[in-house]
Image (cartoon, rainbow, N blue to C red; front, side):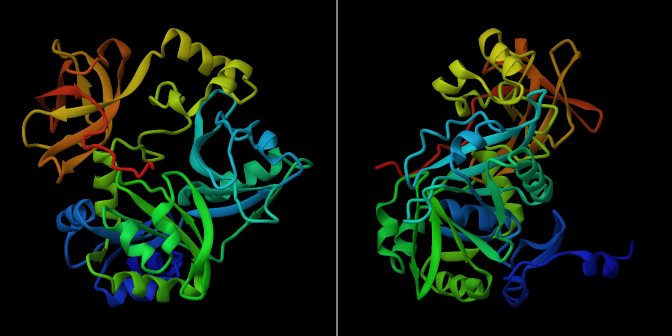
Length: 377
């Protein structure tokens, strides 16, 4: 397919014109035309987010509201997270599972706190999976809950140590929000939903707003001191340093939460009760251990080990594969994640990485590579 035909088939976000005006380099991503970087460049965009505040367009992600008489109990038949225990205004990270315990997608589930939403959950899912996710949820919960997509909403992510003071200039209540909480408020005359969350490891917010208001809100944030637009390139290196999974790379239908080192998403009640897809397999893996495990990988030279790089033991036997890898600007060196046979998952284990046919030294490393800096009052 010619490049111009490809571009014509791509969807756009409400910030498309702003990205182009800001000099973004645009690339296809999850069926959308998205900014991979701006003139600042990926390295400086990454470091700026760690130091001040970065604004990301994540409007390609899927947003929906799920409503039903016992909506949390209904949704718990599809995910292993404790949704019944969510207080009003709380957010839970969880995973959609298939009957084999494989991960269909990872998602954020919010119990909204505003009046009239007591029977609702707000869902945010990955862009490439959203059509399949929403169809799966709607069909699986038919008769118990009704899913309504919000395809007209934009989603902005403001991340970094200056995010709270920046957003509080427009929404004072934002400053007091704790990590993984949500509220609805007014941003320059527009009703928006705030989520104090994000996928950089930094303190930050995601802002759901009507598409028609998105550009004005983005411009208002970018006009504040210390805020720069950030593209997909830095978003990927930030989440990798933070040890956070990218769906389709680090987790997919061939990996279970236990294999993915995500046992923490399954609370005590869900472990005791089960009742989620693949529960028998996953609970057995939690008890007895899984055959493979997602770990951090630190190449010991300067060469990065990228996705699909073979991981070997010191004898040269294959023991796993890199799923995400690249240069970590904050640690000034290569970092990676991948799966290894569980016998090799201990931090500090010496390994070899087969890069361009050459075995290079590495070791299993603790995740995250940089400390998380979430705001927990």
